Amino acid sequence: MTREELKHRVDEAIERHADEIVALGEAIRRHPELGFKELRTSALVETKFRQLGLAPRTGLAITGVRADADGGAGPGPTFALVGELDALVVAGHPEADRSTGAVHACGHNAQIAGLVGAAIGLVRARAMDRLAGRVVFMAVPAEEGGDLEWRLDEVRAGRLEFLGGKCELLRLGHLDDVDLAMMIHTTPRPEDGLTCVPGSNNGRFGKTARFVGRAAHAGGAPHMGVNALYAAQLALAATNALRETFRDEDTIRVHPILTHGGSQVNVIPGEARLETYVRGRTLEGIRDANAKVDRALKAGALALGASVEIETLPGYLPLRSDRTMTRVFRQNADTLFGPGACREAGHRAGSTDMGDLSQVIPVLHPYMGGARGTGHAADYEIIDPHLAYVMPARAMAAMVVDLLWDGASGAREVIAKALPGMTRQDYVEFQRSVRRREVFQGDA
Ligand SMILES: [Zn+2]
Ligand SMILES: [Zn+2]
Image 1: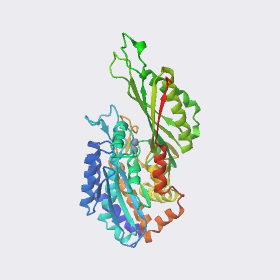
Image 2 (image 1 turned 90 degrees about the vertical axis):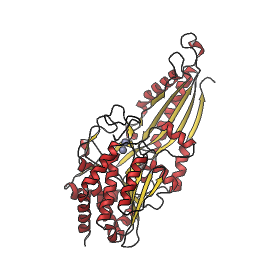
Image 3 (image 1 turned 90 degrees about the horizontal axis):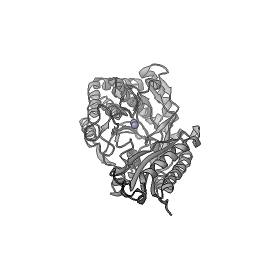
Image 4 (image 1 turned 180 degrees about the horizontal axis):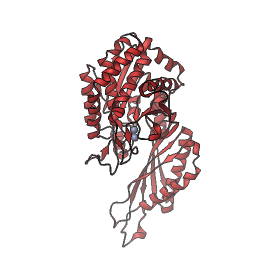
C-alpha cells in the first residue's frame, strides 16, 4: 500500500462516520463549559476514545484527556493532535448557557469533533499498523482566558499554577514525550478562505489590579472617603492615553475590564477591581507595554490617594508556526480543497497557549472555515458542519499519515529543521518569573 492509498482509506473511514462526528460537534455546542470546568465535555471525549479501543488518561490539568496509539512500523517521534474543550462567556449570544453564560463562540466544539474524527479515521482504517512512532489524541482544557478571579482562587488553593490548559499540561509533564503537535481552529473570517496558516500570534501577560480607598457616606460625608472607583477610572483613562505610544509593529492589545466598581450606591466605593491582558508580538513589546500599564494603574491610585495592588500573571507566549509542518499542511489542503486553497494569514493579534507549546516543540495552528459572524461575539455560529467538524479530522489525519509514514521520516525532518526552542524546564521557570505582586500606596 502506498502512502496516498492509506490516506484515502483513512479519509473514507472518516466520511463513513461523518454523521457521528457532526453529532459530537453539535452535542458539545449545546453544552458549553468554561475552562477547567469542562467535565461533561471531557467525559464525552473519554467515551469516544474508549469506543475506539483506546485507553484514555483523564483528569490531566483537571479536565484534559489523552489517548495514545502506537505505530506498528517501528519507533519514531510522538505527534500530538490537539483539541480544546472550553467555551467562553459572551453576553447576548442566543446559545449562551443560562446559568454560566458559556457559549461556543470560538468554535472549540469543532476542534473536539475534528480531534475525535481524526482518531476514528486512523483507528478504524487501522492506519497505525503502517505508521511509525506514536500519535497522541489530546483534548485540552481552558484555552480561553477570563474567569480570572475563579482561576486565581484555584491557584491559591493549589489546584492550578498557570492559568491556561496547555501551560498546565506542560508544567505537569503531560506533554514531556510529545515531539510535535498540531490543532485546527475554526474561523468565521471570510478573508481566511477555506483554510489558512498564520505566521505568528501575539503573546500576552495577564494582570489584575485592586484599588483600595476608604468607604464613607456618599451623601453625608463623601469628603471622608477615598473613591476607589474613580482611581480605577483614571487608571483606565491613563491606559487609553498610552495607546499612541505603542508601536504598530508590536501589535500591542490592552483591553481592561472593570470587574468590581463599588458595593452600594450610598457608599463611596472603598474597593474597585480591574483585570486586563497586555498582548504583543514579542516578549520585549509585551514587557514594554506592561510597564506602562503599571504606571497608569499607579497614576489612578496616586490621584485619589488610594492604594493599588497589582498582580502580573503568566499568560501565553507568542505563537510561531513550524515551516516544515506548514509546507506539508499546504500540500494536504491542495488535495482536500483544491490547489492553492491554503492562504497565508500573516500575524494575528489574538493569543493562544498553543504559542507556549510552539516555544518548546514544533507546532502548527491552522484555521479552517465553516463558521460565520465574529469570534467571541454574539453572532458567531457554525453554518457548514461538514467543513467545520469533518474536514479538520481529515486534514489532521492526513498530517499523521504524512509525518509518520516511512519510519516517520516526515516527523524526523520537522524535528531536525525546527527552530531551537526552550526546554520544558526553561518554560516553567520563565512563566514563574512573570508572576509579580506589587502594592503602590498613592497616599504615602
Ligand atoms: Zn477564543
Ligand atoms: Zn479559540
